[in-house]
Length: 231
Image 1 (cartoon, rainbow, N blue to C red):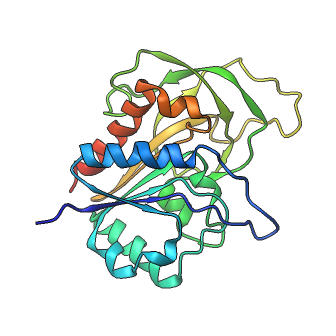
Image 2: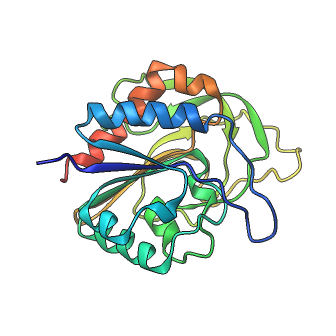
């Protein structure tokens, strides 16, 4: 029996009102995620054009790993297949960094990844509080984790999201343009379960150094392990 696939979607698509940002790290991320997929017993499938993945393939299950940005052009049939396969527990969702800044015309997408991107006024070094150390994605970390990345703001964080990492307090310049404290605070990674359906998301991973850092790769591997626990 062939292993289940892990679709690694790195497609850059425009926003409705203009071009989306391009992450130079996408190739490096795809390689690392493919290696993690193999270690988890999944067959990695790198997807730079979602038109190459049929609804039937999605319905088969596995993991949908998203390092996407902009209006990723999933068809209505693909969207329905993702939602149905996720709800059944057959398809896990692994969101990385800008995945929350994608598919804004897909009403249910925010529920799948857990929240919507709402800006990033800061890019800097910061300390992360490990909010929940009882998770495979965080169990290898100490109480705090020093990092350098974009600090994302989020809207509509799912009330059932289990926050794993959050920005430690007192580190941000609140005078910069766009600075504010969202209703959800500053979560940086979370997971959520709905019956057997599972999603994991981390906001970290903008810079190449992340993909060369063992602690970060273990963070992703732990998220993938958690997704697979229900399958």
